[in-house]
Image 1 (cartoon, rainbow, N blue to C red):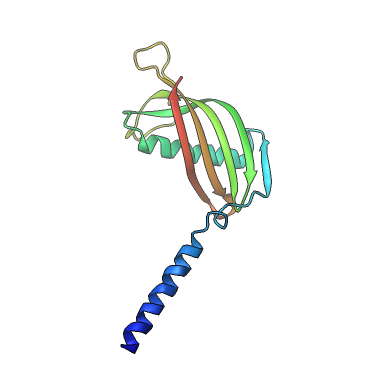
Image 2: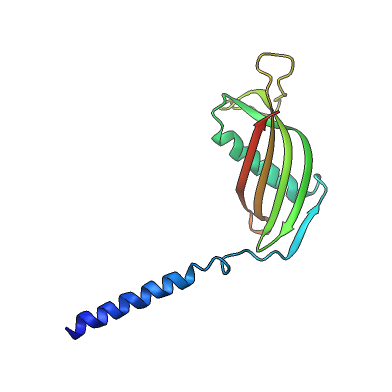
Length: 142
């Protein structure tokens, strides 16, 4: 009887600890530096955009690769990582996804295959560790 009472007490303690650890206020990411517009030619921005486009093309069901047509705006926020908010216009290229050469890809224009998309990517980065992660992606036909 004493053993089952001790087990019950242990389970209640674990449950209380789990409830206490799910406090939403404790899980908020602390913003160390608010959003600031930065130059799209920044080396970290280029890395983040390259990574975001790799992920976009991997997830896309299109037969062709998409490439950046124009970078509209880039903002940086510093939390426990660098967070890049990147707004871009992308377009369908003339390169198929699984071709060996993607060096000479051009955006499809004035054809049935022309397609432009506006995307906003939120990329979390620890570039000094080579770590990149698309946290959020939102795209719509342009």
